[in-house]
Image (cartoon, rainbow, N blue to C red):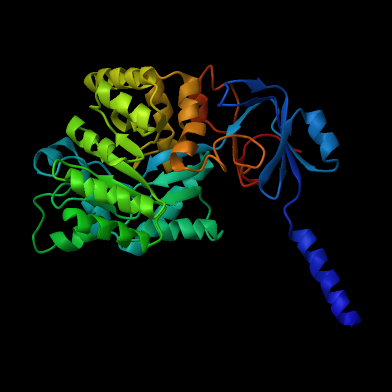
Length: 424
């Protein structure tokens, strides 16, 4: 009997030693994106990977005497960043203009085809693990991966991150995009076309086929459904997709650019419109009234004077409309000299350059993004009960939003991922 009691005591002691310590993170300032207010000085009390209290350093030190302290000095502390639209299993190199002009598939598809045909599924997942780590190190503690991941590459990567086998952000995975045949890739070698496309897409053919496609993705454990609407997805098919997804308690994100396709998504009750470059004023009003999110993707907002002008007009219309909005990098490109995280962070300058105020940018990638993902109870703000996911920057991101491109400290779930600052 004594030996059993000793075993229980030993196991309890081991559990206590392995339990995450109570930690206090201190900074000169803490920005609350919800209100725009700044707490100065600030401290966050963390226990078991979640936020227990937020207040002044002296209050937190009294509440938890002897806690481990991480002192971030004169920095500004913010919630971990959310990239609401990314492609972690793509690392496309843009072809030259001369090569693009010789092909029928535009600028994006040749690189996509190389990723599919020249890399095995296993290699793509390993590349995705690298890019996920680089995103996390740049402060993106949560991402929503929207397709181009093979059949189950992003769900496998998500599960590996969640199990602690590889480092990376919290991840929502969509697996294969739902779309119509021929909408993405055209003029392919007919002997290979089906095999290539089946790795990336689930094709919709009628309302029943639409429901089957949703259920196929559900069988791979997706967190949401991604649909790419061209001019050949019907209203009935879109309604069937949304209906089946919502029945499975999954949100639906819809890639749509033109007013007719955006309208199909709105009428079907989609949860977010991705890109939406040509959205009308009336459609923004309908989205606002229905609570549909507009997900801005500024990848090409400043690629030319014309694109900058169009993006500036779009951003101002979105801000004035009152529609709920978030932002995602849509990053899938290889940028020489930059990690994936550094490339993803380019979206902050792009949004600011077309007229979005810093606080709105920060909200788009924190509290707004969390609500769009349906994760507002766990991420997006430094509040009691949420995950201890933080970033710190040296300056004031309200005065210079490009500070978000120079993150100096990253914490995910109470664990330090990156720290370029003095601590004690």
